[in-house]
Length: 216
Ligand code: B16
Ligand code: MG
Image (cartoon, rainbow, N blue to C red; front, side):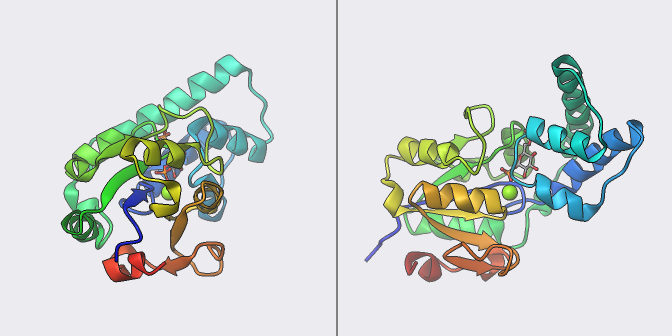
């Protein structure tokens, strides 16, 4: 019997690895402002919104800016980021992404995107996977960021599936907390220790099967 009727996907770190492009663009901005940060620091930026990321980075550099300057800086970073993602190719999908989306479609599972990114649709188009999604919830549609459950609750509502019958696939701690608060099951993509709150953790979607998802 089918217990899970919908699957909500995070984008960055689950279906594609755009974290490297975010990192390059944020680092270029930090360097222009006279400081640097590491790839380890960059982990803390995963899953959180653009403006929150900027505020955190400026804290690391011990720099204060006015609200107007924050807007200008986040726009600058986004322009650099957009220059990079416009060259994305379907080959940049993480291993197993397309196959798992297809498997869910074959099994009649509804599919939604639940991403903090305001650039999500461009990425879905560039990697040629937009047609898999019955609903798309991105950073333009939410008031609050993960770990708030808003992004996933809107997704479930658009799919018309109760949260208890939804599973979220996430790579960020903030996203896992959001899914659990939404009363959904959650699969973590990444490190078992870091993502220990998830119901199941796998290294990547190439390891996932429909049976595993339905047995949560
Ligand atoms: P943008 P996800 C998130 O995407 C990224 O993980 C996070 O690093 C980024 O700051 C956020 O999107 C906002 O992205 O600047 O494109 O609006 O993991 O929720 O798919
Ligand atoms: Mg993510």
